[in-house]
Image (cartoon, rainbow, N blue to C red; front, side, top):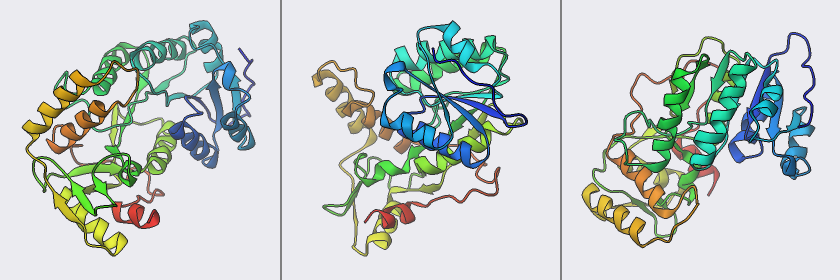
Length: 308
C-alpha cells in the first residue's frame, strides 16, 4: 500500500473509495471545491492511469491499496472524518469489498460512512425484484449493525441516462417510452448534482441515516413536455404495454440472455424501470433538496436542452 500522508491541520479529511469511476471523480472534485482534504483509494494498477493523474492535479492524495486486505484499508482510513464509497459492481464489490472497507473504517475509528447506494429508494421495493437493489439492501443490513454513523444518499435515476442509455426519451423517433401509467411520478438527479450533494453530506456531521433528493420529478407525460420544450420538436408517448407485460419480458430476457458478469445487463435496466414505473422505488417526501442551500438542481428540460 502507498503510505497515506497526514492531512493539513483543521482541514477535514474524507477518504474516497471508487474515486476513479465517473461518480467518484465528480465527488472528489466537489469535495476539493468545498475545501476538504481528499484521500482517494485506488488499486495499484490504477496509480499510473489518467483518472489518478486527474485527481492529483486537483490536489487529491492518491493512495494505492489492496482492497482484499482489511489491514491495508485500515491504514488508509486513519485520520478520516468520513469514508465515502463510490464503488460499483456485483456482490463481490458491493457486499464483500465494501464490507472490508466498512470494517476498516470502524477499526480506524472513523465516525461516519457513506455507502455506494446512489439509486432510487431500494428500501421500498420488493425483495428479488431488482438484483442490484438486493445487493444494496444486503450491505445495508451489515452497515446498520456496525458501530459507525451511516448515511445513504438516494437520488432516483441518474438523469444523465435519459440522453440515450436508458430507453425512455428516444431522440431519433421523438418518443417517450413507458409502461403502465403515463402520470406516474419518477425521480431524476444528474450525476453532477448527486456528487455535489454527497460532498456536502460528507462534510456534514449531522446527517441522518437516509437522505433523499431528486433534481426533478417528472411523469412520462411530463418527460414528453420537457423533451418537446428542450428540443423544439414534438415528442409523443409510446406505451408498449402494462407493467405485467414488462415483468414477463424481464423474465424472458433473463432466461435467454447468456450468463454475464455485467453490472447492468439489459434485464437489470428493465428491472430498474419496472421499480420506478410501478411507484415502488419512488422517493417519499419531503425530499432533502433544501438541506444545503448553495446547491442548484438541474431539471430534465435543462439537461436535455444542454445535450441537443
